Amino acid sequence: MTEPPADLVGLLPHRPPFRFINVVDACDPGRSVTARWRVPGDEAWLAGHFPGNPVVPGVLQLEALAQAGAVAVLADERFRGRLPLFGGVEDCRFRRLVRPGDELVLEVTLERLSARGGWGRGTATVDGAETCRARLLFAFA
Image (cartoon, rainbow, N blue to C red):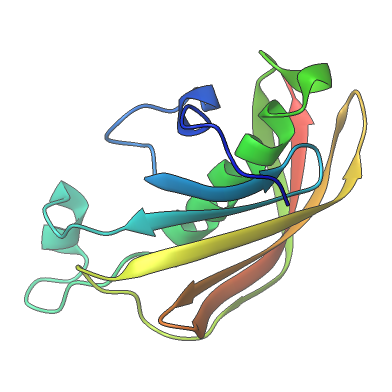
């Protein structure tokens, strides 16, 4: 993996409050990425999921993995400026709860990449313990 330029997060079309990547630690454009998302705990959706027992929804963990994968795709000059959209999920498993204050480490390896889209395999961890893993399909708009 190569050292990431500081602006890799800026490649994402997502903006707060729907950007779930804070830092990109490593990126091999078109191949793989390691990124992080710290859940600060002030997100409005935590108040309702669940009152008195806040838990990060699994679908947002998947979205964070997809956004990490999008960084690896968009860092590849062939796909710069394209819009990768979620197309599907396979082999998804949630292994442990994610709570406010946790930092997810998001690792995505692209398996297939073409002009139309591709597949990636992602794993999210907190303190080395797996929270989520899935195979992600994306298509370019």
